Each structure stands twice: as structure tokens, then as C-alpha cells.
Length: 248
Image (cartoon, one colour):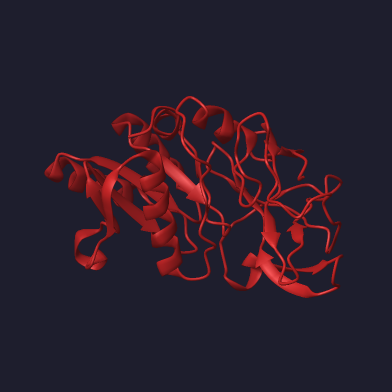
């Protein structure tokens, strides 16, 4: 079972509790990406696919595989990269780790702060989609919206002209899979799309958000999420916390 570790954000000095993700090795044993508590988290100035993967050896079969590098989105908007021990220990059971407090499965588990909010609404554990391509990011966001309770959620056919990546009954969402923080214009364009469709707007970003974009989203009560490559969105503002807590 993966144990939570404390993570300190050097930007705003907040302390977080982070539960490392667990992945299934080809041999069937769980591989927990154990975070090194003695190594400070590093703010990510930009996001590159080459640096987004970490090679970890399974202790059960000695096989080396690449897994998404653990990242944590701080509410201040900073995305933190966490140091990983390359040789991983084997857990006591080959079953997915279960947090008995929140009922959230170990693979791709969100930090404890998100789990606590999500416990306000009874729903099954979210099963993340590992992100390797931009299309995977859109699929992960669509799956998360369904998990929140939105109905008829589908990936938009033409994202380039509308600025909307996912649509559902009463919701529109944008997914920014680029390596730059999402901008004020990105947030306002999504909000206008939601206003036009009389739908709630939700934003997902891999690289976080510029400060003015976060401030504008707070004014509009527009939920902002960051996603790491495990495909588990994490709320970064109060509107996102409310959405996770109450659901669709």
C-alpha cells in the first residue's frame, strides 16, 4: 500500500500530502512510484514529453519500464515534479492499493486534499487514463467529467475553431495539453463558450495556469484542474473544489 508523503511547495510554502501512484507491472506485481522525501520538489517552468517519464525497476521481476513522472499541482498554480526512487519495493498484496479512509484506489490516486473533498459525494473510485499523447489528455478529461456525474460527455470533433475539447449535457471543457501555462485568453474563451451554450465551463491543463488566468477564473467561478501524466485531475481553485465535492 502506498504511503502518503509530505510535499512542500517552494513557491507558496504550502505543505501537501501526496499519495504516490501505483502501476501494474507486466509480471502482475504492483509498482509503486515511491517519492523520495529527502529530495525537494522542483517547480516546472515548462513541460516536455521527454522529461515526463521515469524509468523504474520492478523488484519482483527486475523488469524496467517507463511510467509517468509523479507531479503535483499546487493551488497556487505551480506544478511540482517529485523525485522518484528508481528501485521500487513490492507491496504486501498484488491488489490495487486502497485508501481505507476515502475509498480511493491506489493507481493514480489523487493527493489527500482532493480525496477528502470528493468523499462528500458517494461515487466509485476514479480510474485514470495514462496520458501519453494530447488525445489521451482529452480522453482523461472526458472520463473525469463522467465520473463527476455529467451525462452524454463526448470529445468535440473540431476543437481548433470552437476552443472546446469536450462537450456534455450542461458542460463544456477545454483541455490544454501544451507545455505552456494556460492563459487569460484561454480561460475567457472557454467561459464565453459556456455562456453561449448555457453550460458550465471546466478547464483542464497539463502545465498549470498563468496568474492572471487563475484570477479571472476565480472571478468567473470557473473550475480549473491540472493533470499529471497519470491522468488524474487535481483542483487548483475553489470552484474546482466545489465541483469535486458536490458533483454535477
